[in-house]
Image (tube, rainbow, N blue to C red; front, side, top):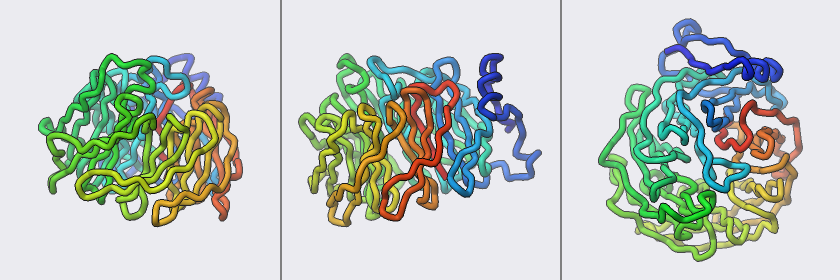
Length: 382
């Protein structure tokens, strides 16, 4: 399938100024397989533009610096939640890389769809755009052949898919409503924040933010189908936003936007969570988190900083320091070799790059302005 790019007259000028190419090519023309050969030395950033969502590709050099390459049309529209400022999706994981199947998944919140790209090094080929199974998709998670999409509006829901021959197949029986208050405002803090896997793919985890202050855990059967209802852990006042899991897949590191903190939990076999430790960031709007080995990088949108912690096997959290970013720090991603961190900043749509020092601190290595990405969320690095 040929790459599709939406480039209007104004966009051409912007992309040309940024050094981004607007050419098209097919997998056959480049001599690669139809299903991709995987991401390599690349950073992908999603614009979430309401006029037409795109994924912008950057080549990663040996020094970690980024060179703009191309903007790829998703075939859908971005969306904007009420009261959102620097992250219009108010979520983590709206752009997700499936390393096993060499696919990239992007949500189109404004058109209730999900796009599937084949990945060839630093190039993308759009293979599929399909319904998200709900309203306003904001997050995607993958484990083995199971993929789940989190829909944020109308009470929230999760929709499951399986990967078959480089495409997603919707599993209608794998849809679960979250039962959140659809009228709670502001939308930014009262819509679910992330879907992800834990316990080596046996649990599906969803955060509800201020709409209940809950972490929902669905048990999954051997095929990946969810239990009829989740086990709910209530965290009063926490506003649970985003999370990552540790190497054992049963330690959950969760951002709490209410107290501006990061907290660790043990995911138990029955789906309950046991609290381990909480560390206040001392920053504002602590919402996003990325793990690089035993290091945690926590984004504070209101402070334009990243808080750094070293996580212990027992769930302990040792503060390392903070690093400054451009305004509106949101989601981030690390290169596959763990040497570089890239941070989206939604205030001006800027992508900040950092080298990760041996002690976990960050050294700035340059920034790129992503075209049409003010308020955008969604980043992948390889």
